[in-house]
Image (cartoon, rainbow, N blue to C red; front, side, top):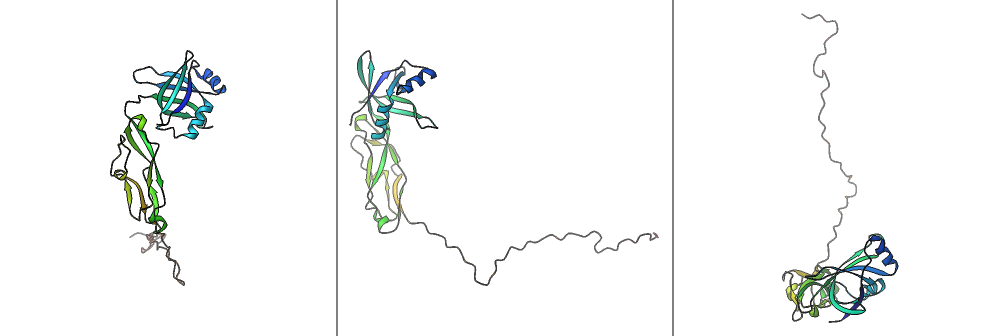
Length: 230
């Protein structure tokens, strides 16, 4: 397992005003949650966190959080639970960490990467459809795979790769439905050719049947003015 380090300090700056000052100094407010313990307020370097995000797939990656406390550093293994972003400027607002045990199995999502070009695409004109982009696995934090690579070069038209077809590393248990399709080569979509009108024929508009309105007095003799009644 690759060790990813991130420095952190205990945070005393609480409240909206103080958090703003914290950000102005180049820090991001954070919280670490531990089973059976109270949540602890931290602050991490914005620059370090951004470099970590750019160089690693942070979801499902174990981070060794080096917390400085009383002039001492204590390494705490954790996962990033959530990163909150500003919806307008896309800046990082807050980070939540979950402390974990390296000897206890956890559930994480692992991305799936297709490798190669299928026969069904380059020779048969089909298209590769990537249906399942990640799988959920259960394993020790030290056994979390970086990703799952699938060779699709031999995949022909109409063929598919299911979860059950993937050889997972020892100690890694997949939790998805084994029959779920991950990748498949589908036939190209057929374009519908519009029917052209025959030359000389005019497009006929649908005939509208109108209800005949009765004209008052139609079919009846109109009474003559001044005619005496018998």
